Length: 394
Image (tube, rainbow, N blue to C red; front, side, top):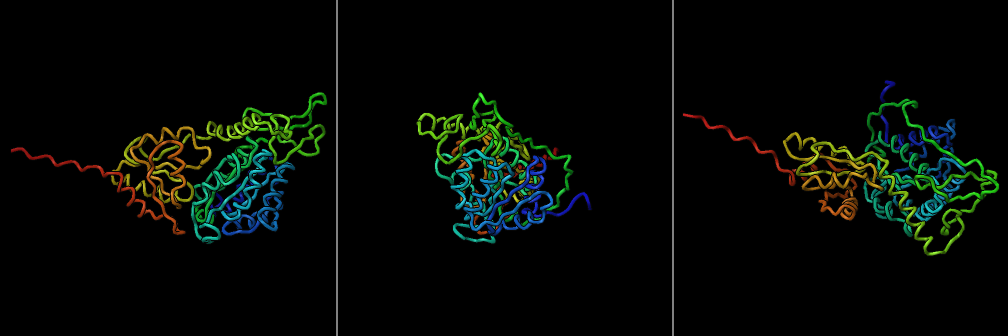
């Protein structure tokens, strides 16, 4: 007691958001519309007005994401959340936040689909929606917690990336994580990394403000409205490089599209390298993401105890993926990808790394059991041969 406590995924996300707001010195604005299984984040955040948290229950998902864009433009830590159906409605607003280059967090607590689908059941079928579910070339960073306790850390990491790169960041949780519970070590705020947020304080009157000038991370300045000398225009039309003025120039559009994509892809050089549990090379590598972590980890441990050549790696960063992932994947004869969908991560890994992944797929609204994963792994990872007894002489 006092060191550990049980925590549920949605509660952990809410607390992580509050911690990130304090670590960055920004008041938290949470604009949302109730939807299962994300609503408990709103319920939890309403308890913490004493930490400067502002919660807004909008009339619909579109209003929710637009209020979040406004909060980001005004200089707040801006967050919105939903499940798959609501993320579909937020898609245009997410694209606007992307071209405006404003720091925001968009949380998708995934559930069974399509449409209204299975609202109270878990699924991992919104990965491609997060990757490509906006019009135009609109890449955004995507992070996925692996467990209820990890939601706290993911929220802080997402806000750090959003402010560093000046772009919306997607968090892909799921119903299994949101409603699951596990022991969590209560951190001290002094142990958590500070999130440095800088705003330009004004410009030389002889030097006009350039709202789309870039820093070393290709991020533009986060200018607060009303700051003398920092008047600028924002909108959904393509920006001229540097000035932010509306531009239909084809070469400029190519350049800005490439720049926004590079800003996201370059994150791979700053996130931790992908770790592997087990041998660094061998017969089988199990690649998981999201709420399948626990079942995959335990299944691999059991197979290792039986002498099988198998390892496990779990992806928390889905866009971009870690820079060393290519080398990791090609160190094994077979790559198995368990997912609660019909093969979305498998599709991405095949296209990005040209590796013939083998899918273990389940779309029943239920998580994997350890036993069924062990059975699938055993089909591909041979057991260690028993040593032959030595013959007796004479």
